[in-house]
Length: 98
Image (tube, rainbow, N blue to C red; front, side, top):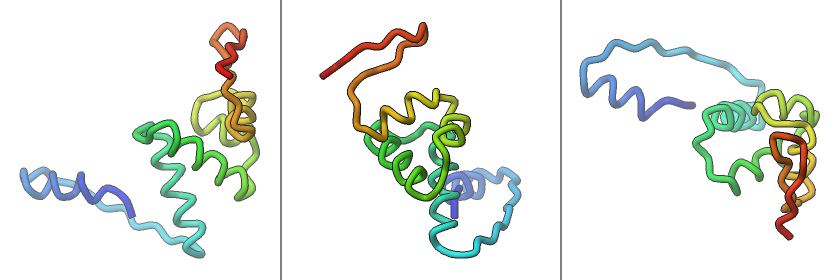
């Protein structure tokens, strides 16, 4: 499901690796795992990340669960869901980009 690029690099350079097999009840669960895994790596652009956050929420994740997974605030998750262009600054002030 994931790591095929790392596997190829390891094989090419003779680096030892292990493979972890995981089972999922269905394709939807597998895709949710993939998204969560990619979100945690932060290798998505903002539009992709925001879309996946919306999909996790639609899939039953709470705002707090999404926030905890990504290391962002619950309020930021809510802003992303609403499509807000307001940014919550670290000192809890907001900046409106509308």
